[in-house]
Amino acid sequence: MHVRKGDRTAEASTLARLGTSLIEEETFTEVRSYLQQALVAYRDLRDRGGESMAILKYGNSFVVSGEMEQAREQFENAVAIFRETQNRLGEGMALGNLGIVNAETGRTDLARQNFEEALRLLPAKASIRPRQRSGRGRCSRP
Image (tube, rainbow, N blue to C red; front, side, top):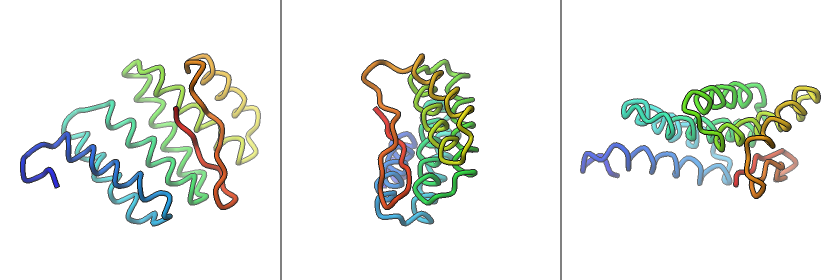
């Protein structure tokens, strides 16, 4: 991988992409391993943008596997970092994903609040609707 060349940013990005690409195959141990490695690399680089996106993807892996409480925790972490870095698009995506988790777990009032806040933050073309695969909700991104 990119480690040989010392390009930690490219390494982090590649690890995140590897993890994301495997979500469809439902190999969650491998998915999470790559995403955790990406998180370490982004944190080493002090790249809060990369870190927050990796956390968002990590949360998506829990949604796909039906582990909603773990997904909620990751999405809340992502929201916090997006707010800290003033990334309105990222915050809107994370809030939309959090809304999906809250809706799936019966927290409809909280889900509505998440969706309303996400809609205020996201551009009109962004999508926060769930995609269905194997009967489980899946979070969309623009």
